[in-house]
Length: 291
Image 1 (spheres, rainbow, N blue to C red):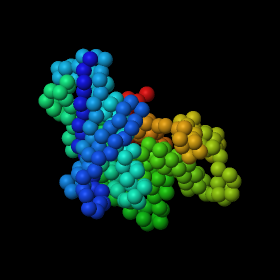
Image 2: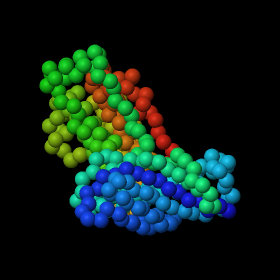
Image 3: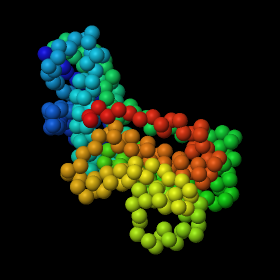
Image 4: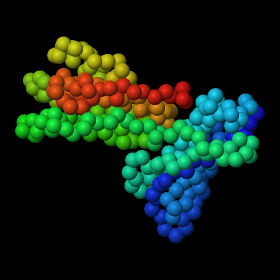
């Protein structure tokens, strides 16, 4: 049995007046986390301690990393919970991410603090874009010459990728998935434009399945796209009963990105981001430690 202490420091900018020192206790399913805010120094110190059944030493940290990561993950969720209260209940505006990890330390049984690599969503990077170069600049100029706007779906995809809240990541990703298939069909097959506007929106499983197959001769992961739409509906209609981890939301956003790349490549074979050279990064997925 060991007593583990965690301390993570984040950079944050919060508007304040008067006192610049605050403390908050955030209760979570597996414990309460203490957050010390020094708004003058623009930092938040997150603190937690927990007891393990296993005997953990500094030498055995690596082999027990999953235990520490699970606690670090919950501490980060607690931080996000606190930041959501500050942002939405005080009407403050933050960029994304709202907090940036500065450093993280752990101690075992009151020993010295040692650095460790925490589970932090702010350290996870979404797929990078394509460089602006001679080839991609020609494609951009052609879009401009032809008066073709970027897919509106891409704006919602970017919002999903900038979000840190799993709830809003899924909601934005589902919107992006629905808009993308409709924009693809409308541009590729203009005679469908009126039909898509007048009829009630079919489920994503049908849009990416039988409808795409009928008009384009191909399907694209219809069940996966419908799963994202179903998750979105649950988050909207049963918000208190629906929980989703960041990593699961992240992976779903990447699935939507892959779908949009597929559609863009079908529509624009030389698209600089959706062409083969732009596909490799988005295949990355991360493991969900909370499952």
